[in-house]
Image (cartoon, rainbow, N blue to C red):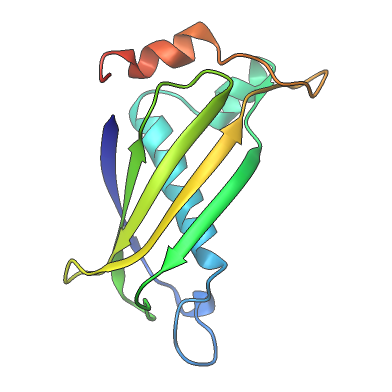
Length: 134
């Protein structure tokens, strides 16, 4: 299992009329954390796509506990709970600056061949990026 934390400041445009982060923005925060997580291991979506493999989202689940508000600094804790195979699973926890849990979620991405759009196995070197942590 691999876990990393990424800090994000809530922007005004991400809040609703109640001054609370709109629920749809948590998926954006998850994506920001996923992108930086992969980058921290030397991988990018762009590089993977240039090699003919895509990673569309196949499942998102979320649970909300407390609201985040404009200008809050939040921490997205992202965990890779298993080695990738034909899917890449990420668990997320979002905390405020006081360490209170605001939100949890899981995102599942599927490895697909960019040409055929059919499922495929994760490239061996992509799996190797994470192997030493398991």
